[in-house]
Length: 157
Image (cartoon, rainbow, N blue to C red; front, side, top):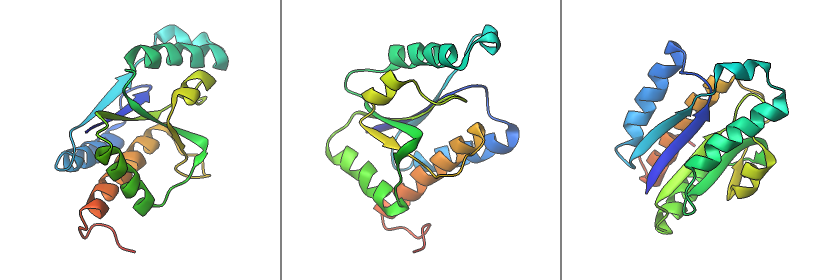
């Protein structure tokens, strides 16, 4: 199974990028992993939130394959403990999922059509985080789940 983390926006700030790269490299010891950044046109600054979400939706829909197992990160999603995330990822691997996609939406969230395509909607927290920080939290939690799945010492109960 390959894990892909998709995000909308601009490149990470250097203080985020270093952590994302580190955890991405670590996850590579467990699963192939790749990040995909969807960049928007410069004119989107003039768009309404709904128009912006539509533009993002079109980019995502074009990249999705019918066999992808899509997980949308959204504040209205279900929360998971780190152990439940580990089981969740392991279950996808046992189901022979080819590509497990974690999608971080843009500043205004994800359009309803993409949320409906999601097989699971996950909320990291009831708190609101800066968009780029979500990338770091996501990749750290995936790494943590990988170590839990292998019964390694990174995670402490």
